[in-house]
Length: 465
Ligand SMILES: *Cc1c(COP(=O)(O)O)cnc(C)c1O
Image (cartoon, rainbow, N blue to C red):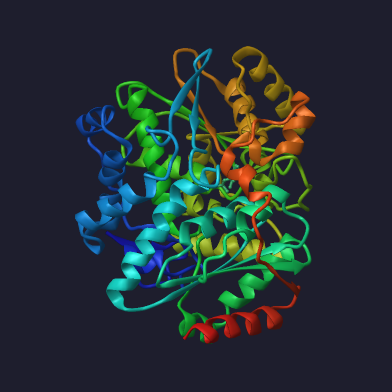
């Protein structure tokens, strides 16, 4: 299996090369050159298999020749052993045809662990084999950085530098990053906002010398290996609920469109028929796009669901590529329009393709809070605010006789302020999180300047080699 760029101008590369890079050289995102298939009998058989077994069946179809099966399985076993639920991603019946797919049983209590626990191990495997090293640089508003650090800490071939906006992540999320004292991890508190952090990281990735010298790689959801790992839990849930003999719908709290794109990929692999519901908060660019056909970012408004406070959903480009019949030149044209004019119009055929599979629901903070209160009353279960956005969208779009799976993307203890505001008290804090409150933290503060961050990185890596 080889990987092609959504903008059509980059040479195809193998799975391990795509995993250890960032954007394609033409600015696009890597995609498998064809969708591997799971036959109906294979999907039925997966309904009774363990999570690692399903993961192997799904992921080997994407890694192809690049990773020997025994090595892939070893990485899978090691990654999911750290989850605190035997099923890894348990499915809970919420009644009324709605099922909660719990993705927060990993070490940082958000769904990003599912991909990043595996990605770290696969990267280490690929680097060891080639005798190279990689430097991961990323910006985070919270969950991505914590999951990336936890997935990469202690690795011999990977260094990681994560930028967060100083004083603007929640205390829980900050501690999850800064209490990691492994020699290969550095946290930078940037005197600026999340956009400043992201702009610095983008500039660094544009520095060809730095990229080549340090093997700069990305672990945000532009990395195909992350999407591939997330396809697994759609297969697990769909097979348990009777796919492919019965339709299954999914509602997904969406920010960068990575998680829901993994659902689309599972659908394209022949795993299930059904609708994919994009759940957004007040930052509703995707809901507006599906309604009007016009993709137009506006300013981001801060909400109680910070991981969905995004105005440009990078993985939407992957869906555009699919909707355009894989016409990379057309995707490149739309992206040029976005850059030059700040918006683009979806050609009617592309809009029709997307509407045929996706719905979108904008959910306000008040609606999500009401759902959190109602779910606690009815089931004694506390939802995190991101999950609640998905559950509201799931209720609105549920079809009679079709199971609807709402993805639970974070543990409520990660967002104590929003939970308290909604239900009057915080969620019980897992022991691991409580213990962090008294652990030593390590973090360096820098101004929001690319030069300062680059000098820091050179000193950090220089000091190690
Ligand atoms: C990252 C995140 C999301 C959004 O996922 P995308 O793949 O960016 O769409 C939703 N909820 C939580 C809790 C997250 O951490």
